[in-house]
Length: 239
Image (cartoon, rainbow, N blue to C red):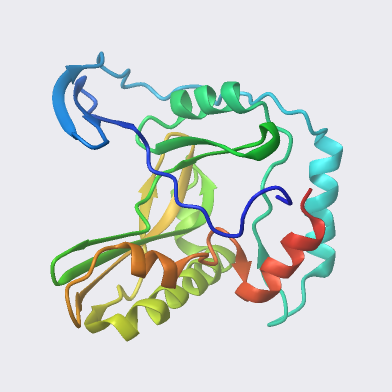
């Protein structure tokens, strides 16, 4: 991450939104933004096999970093970190993620020195419409075949509660009302199950999403908890 700035806003030139029946809308962004309806082909209904990602980092290196994080955990001082997988081949990783996660926002952001930031996000962090705001919290994960495990796992429920509480605390100064679900729901993705909470509120005054993104990011779901401790650990140990 050394070559990357601490903050960067990247806007796509083209956005394609499609449903499972193959109906889509393509948005072209720029000085003369426009959109048109396109056909993208019907998506298969059966579950795809997990796609193997081509990694330039050895499995031993990755697991070693995970084990180091586990050894460094301390109650209240460092409870969670979310390390990125290093050394993935950007183009093939992006294609594999798009194939494996058809309902996610799949992205590849080129960076300095031939680097790239690649991922697939199944949730929208925050959205606004005049006075209304909605934030989605996904945290706590189990295998897709174990719905009862994620529903009753104390570890997953605690992890989810940390993320939901952090998002709520960041949104409250901007809201006159904020509803936080008492318990999360289960969100089913192709190969995993997440615990999901949707927080909805009324803003003190209408505003776009970017000021709220600034207040929310990074959440415990993508950095860890406590936030500052997790960020310090990632800065010290990620390549």
